[in-house]
Image 1 (cartoon, rainbow, N blue to C red):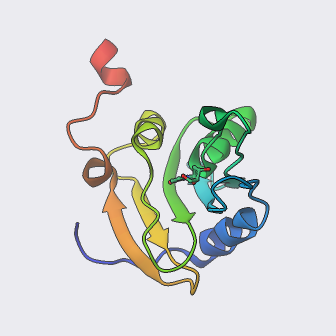
Image 2: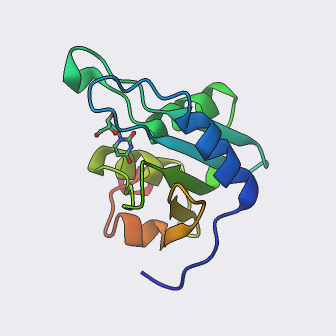
Length: 137
Ligand code: THU
């Protein structure tokens, strides 16, 4: 984990606004994520839980689905915010989902409630030695 680079303001605000929409009545842990596509679009997602607990969807996965629906399949930056001051680092499944749609130059920012950047990670720090589309070629 290298130097802390500050998360971009527009993604910070979009992630916080998305977190306000989270549907998390079971864990009560609200998460927001906002990414910037290669073409410069800002797309956000929130976690959406379910009474059948494993059926919940993470905020990052929601943002990625919305990005694909919008016609894009690549993003450069993503900001994730959970609750409080503990870094909400993406789960294993979301790391793989982020891997699918990023280059190795992508940046993952984890911020807190106060808009402070807690972690700035490269794609390879997030998911080292990853398996990706290139492995299937
Ligand atoms: N969650 C996310 O949406 N993103 C993360 O990076 C970690 C966890 C969600 C899943 C679940 O709805 C809640 O947070 C508690 O695990």
